[in-house]
View 1: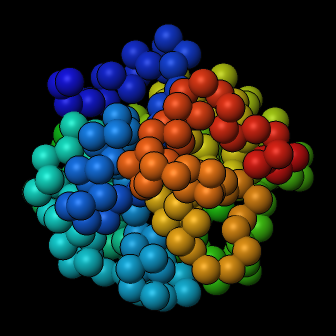
View 2: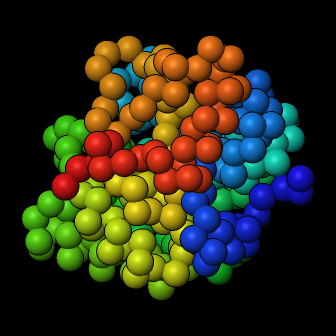
Length: 265
Ligand code: KIV
């Protein structure tokens, strides 16, 4: 199998083939996820919580992201690699260019940024310089202290309208992909149908072009009550982690996960 590229994902959207994405932070998981046939590995800043034991993603540094990206890439996965820019590492376009370049040099193939219309010139400038961008809208965990908790976003008509407009604006600025986190399934369906670029959901219902979960969540490793949008794929799998990941990929691709049961309205 050849390496997955952004153009593969665009073709998958055009063919209505679902895109399966999971987080990966190290070489062992990188190889396992890739060998299982995963389309995209996200080196997410959730590593601050899953690996670092922090309660939010805010403490994650650029150096943390570089280290984990290098570890993931050393396993030479066939999956496309998306890397999160950590908290405040893209506070203005100049800082963003400098830091995104370091993440690309560490092995990132798309760079993910959380935020709304204030990102317009940053997305434009990174795109102009050949750095492909995945935007992240809805619940944006780096702003958790402003949002005031892990809440569904875009339930009110005005907020839903703003989210759709922002998604269109990010696409017009050059974003090549979009992640929608914790938004009502009806809104993510509308955004997915409106945008040309692939839209990947987490807590965003069954109608996105693809799905992402934190790998530790879908293996039931995260302590406490799981979020509504999480399913433990290891629970009924006796063949181990690799088989659970294959079950996840199969479920995303056949549309049996997520269902409305894992969604918000
Ligand atoms: O950092 C991360 O893992 C993420 C996903 C939850 C989408 O942004």
